[in-house]
Image (tube, rainbow, N blue to C red):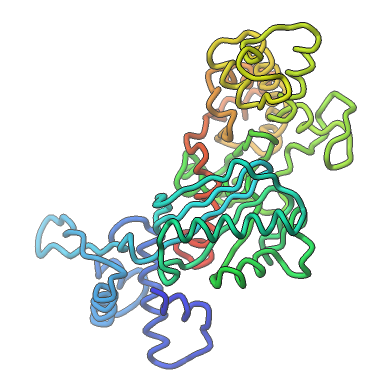
Length: 407
């Protein structure tokens, strides 16, 4: 597999051997993109390769352990053709997610199934060399612990919070002090191709490829955790925007308070919807004399929004009220987006997704107050079931996307 990848990255060679490698790569890509076993006649027809050549190339891929025979295709009459699928162990991808309070690592197979996963929850993201070195050490330690050979890894995908230029792998918000794009720096450090995108865009890719949005042509993916992020899928494409910054839903000025956002402006929706805001508002109401089960288990200064969400799920009145008020504001904002884009599906993911039974009704009420009746009627609301794996799987998908193993 490594030879095929090397050829893909260096396509200037026009020799016959190079042409055959190119055709073998196309066979691997076709099987991977379809995500199902294919027969030699199907591959020959799709790739415009003669049957004898296709048989020869497929046999070589089988011998190399890149694809396997997995059975025979049922037909009404005649000889049943052999089905071929990718060998799940023939190559691996790494997905890394770098968030404000956590960095996560996942080694995955070519179907983005996790093989090894580890989280560093005592992490604090800062735009400093020390923080960057902490990320590098964590990834190196994970690779050692996973006991995987570098020749099995075709690349690493990284999802990081903040603004990212996917086209050149440059992180503009964090680790922007090296004089080179972060993707290039990581590629040198880990000696493999590295691809970078915003963490929420990775989340959206995961939902589109293997999640609930895979059959939706137009969808909005909400990443509601400590902050508020959005991925837009329009006409089956995850929208990047002109420079890769599309989807900054949390910085649309639909907020009602005058608090200055981290972006330096006032009125941002993210100042009223998100985990950080939930923590602040909860502490204010406790200070004003209201009661909650949360404070019986956690000291006020140590309360995290996860604690408030968990308490809401267990029936804590204050927590339920605050989460539902936040959901109502989110719904009102989403109603305006429904008017603008007419999506068929909205998926709410991130840490807040676990409180779906508490969120769903106020979100719908908020949307009904701002959305037009017709587009709202044809818009379904659902919740992600990918949990903490979404960002890492989406990051791994950056690698598969680059090598055209998905489309």
